[in-house]
Image 1 (cartoon, rainbow, N blue to C red):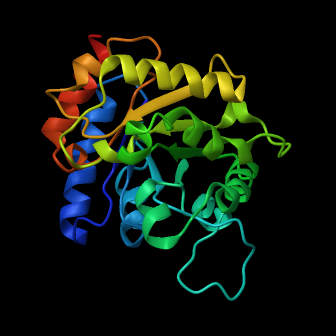
Image 2: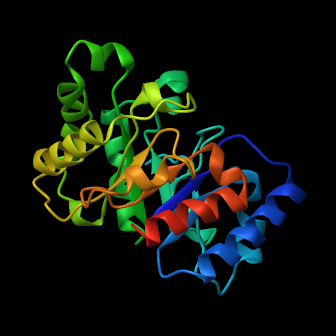
Length: 239
């Protein structure tokens, strides 16, 4: 699975053009391919890529039912828009908007109830990594998912070390492998889909994908360029 998170990029015309290119990428591979455009463009992009293999997701959602929640979208809206998945708990959301694993867990359940799949983002800061707390921090982020009564087999985890997002710095293969194993151990799911994110590029993809612990990638900046994204997909296919 290779997913692209567009974050707060693209105007409408650019988004539709990029989505059409991503559709071509998705149609040329058996790998699951998805994109998370800004929510304003989701409806039109879903229409643009209808009847293709390209999945469309949102960058965030809440567990709440309909009501007075200004600026929010809920799981029912995400499903009704024709999306396949939702990102939850991205480090940028945690840092800027104070989202926590405790607040994210109900949204995970809400997305699962709609038949979609949640992509839950976890990862430590540079301070945590340097202090030897990476495993502890990620375990604490995963803990609220346990004991909720929903099927963890339907959840995708994206490990994104905060210090590697958008910095060009990539975790070593040993660090990536160890954390992917740790995530599966914490959740007691040996077959769990665990993606790596954090400065994934055509240059770094082959090394990242060289371990069978890695189930794919959550791609940031490189997903804004269809050629770069296609190169990452090609690296996955030839791993």
